[in-house]
Length: 102
Image (cartoon, rainbow, N blue to C red):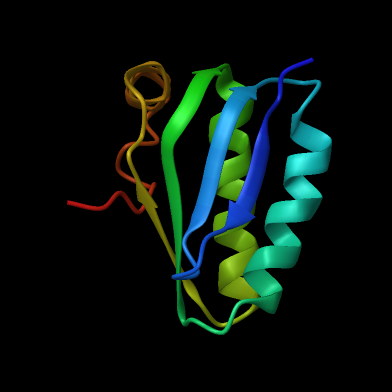
């Protein structure tokens, strides 16, 4: 079991944690979409600093949530992208697309 989860903290920041893989992705995809749609903020922040490990599935989730935010008239910002996800994003050309904080 990957123990992956996404949950909104008291400030409305979406805290993504655990191992992001093909097992955890389907549930995370739906949960994240719901949190984005239901959030009151116009800026949806996804904090990835508690992600333990990720395959390219983690980046796929972020891209899907970007589309969800756009469809809801919101912006998405990604914080704390772990090094393994950053390296995959770099190789695949996604660093230019992902809305990374700072």
